[in-house]
Image 1 (cartoon, rainbow, N blue to C red):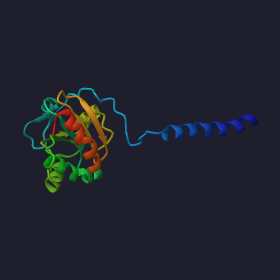
Image 2: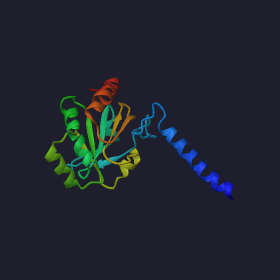
Image 3: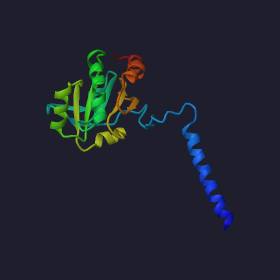
Image 4: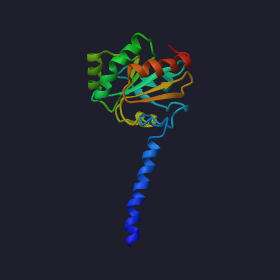
Length: 178
């Protein structure tokens, strides 16, 4: 019994040391969340648009590299990344589509009216099903989809100017867009 009392803290310490060593290994980025969707075809979806006219679906996105941004009016980080999205849509001429995730139509419309609308179209994912199919952990999340409808990159959290310039734009150029 004494031996067990001695070994228990030692075993716990070794287990924690192993977890920390794994997390601190060279080249490990704790901000990167793996996605099973990378290099797979984007999920089938068909959403009503924010304007109420037409639909936004996977077929809409095929034929050119596009960026799909999941956002919500209640999301503070979404508001932080909004100026980056406006720049990408205006200056860099990105094919940018939005999906209002678990948000009220009127709240999403108010956000875009207030801060500007960078999107070529906005689908309304009221119940979050499309987000779930994409593997969205939370908003904002941004996906790059190639000309064949395959997901090539996922950005978790708000896009920054640095991320846009060093990762997003070069990827789009490589895929034949922008």
